[in-house]
Length: 224
Image (cartoon, rainbow, N blue to C red; front, side, top):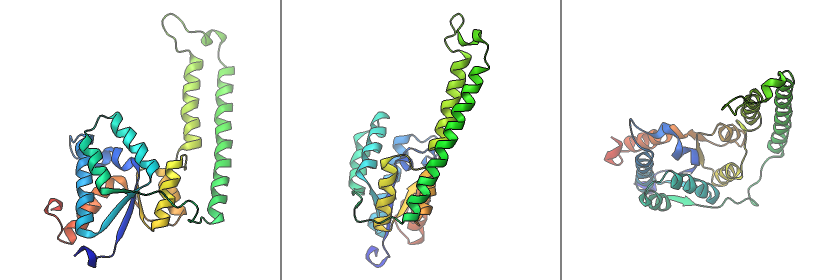
């Protein structure tokens, strides 16, 4: 019986629903999300597993799903089976060492971003002046290409693998508050889940995890 099982809780990230890793062969995004939410529902009823989402993540996910024109059925199931809960930002404590590491990491990333900018500036300085003017119908100059490459490298230097949004922070604070596992495909969130001492599951593995739980406990037949 669900009441006899130790309660498990998970906090879900936007990336879980968007990643192609949860899709079966030739499955659409909408079908994959509906199948995932069916598993979440079954796990809740059969195994007492609860899934949560901060309101900021819910808003972000809803916007992304609407942009992809999924049906209202997706939102109905999402609101039914995934609990929206605001994290207790005032009550949850964070060790000073984690804040120190975050500040130290961001300082290092800013330095790397400056080096990326300096390298791009030197490349532009070496260009032939004629390369700074587009020819014919080609409106992309060599300088434009250098700047485009710089933006990509700068973004990776400053943002890849780091907490870079309020939504990410809400996710971790709520998971810490509930002593829940984090479900995400975001490498930055995974890295900081380790720092917070939180359990995590890669988003692409989450449907399989629920199916295995159901199979092991003799749950719903769809897990067979």
